[in-house]
Length: 412
Image: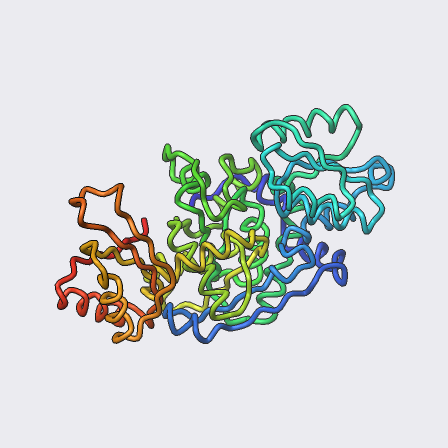
């Protein structure tokens, strides 16, 4: 990445980040940085995980929000703060503002899930619902900032917020000084700006690689002079930002060695792996760093890589769906479509083959009417649980050997 003028980059330095660390010490969780032996073996890199999902509000956003609040003069604190957010920034700001006795107002789009509204209200915030999009909520928050004489706290495009996020790097390199590469999620760019600034100052040879979802490549496109759409339903909604910050884009341009994109399947796989292997729950954005190692193994192989698990706020129903999809992709959960003749014993004979192959049947779906088969034919979808792809292939081979027409129903 090309360098830029020192004016914008110099607004956040190692000194600012160290001062922020002293300021917030004892008021946020000093989360552990631990080596993952299993993920290291899987990826070919030495993988170190920073468990920011263990913060009280389950996300790193507390650090920047608290640093910003502690730097506010008493007169501004008394009037209160306002922000536009439907996610982790809202909860982190609300939690620490309540602790400090600072009135806080959060503007959220009307489409915000009820659980996020109630969680933010539970931290003592006044939540206002406005507009159908984040941009509409943001515009309304800026109007209220002036009308109510409040201090607006930006989720990422603020030097004091960035300095707070940079404290993560101080802890990581203290716990794992051998880290020579960081894989950092990018939404608006605040996390990478802070962490990258601190890491490069402490260890100049260290490489910083940003990670964005393929559906929201806003920073990647901006810094590579590309015109790419930023839209769609991504699992990593925490980094689904259409417009990077004005300050963060300059800092990222100066310090990022690379930015890589990851597909939804890599994000889903990473969420599942972290739960299965590390027994830790992360949201899609929190899994982006690991997703980069899965999607671009050659970029990280042989390196000692630090990954920030930046958040753990994922809807439980969505998490269940991600885990089931991962089981399906790995062959441990499958749906087979079998063509049968509509006669007594037909399903029994198929079930017998499943039993012989030690495959557990979970659900059976018959389809007699909406099919292109003759009236005496039927389609049966059978969901089953196997030990893996080889076990599944043996089952399919056995069914075929008995003369059944069978196909796998694949995921998109």
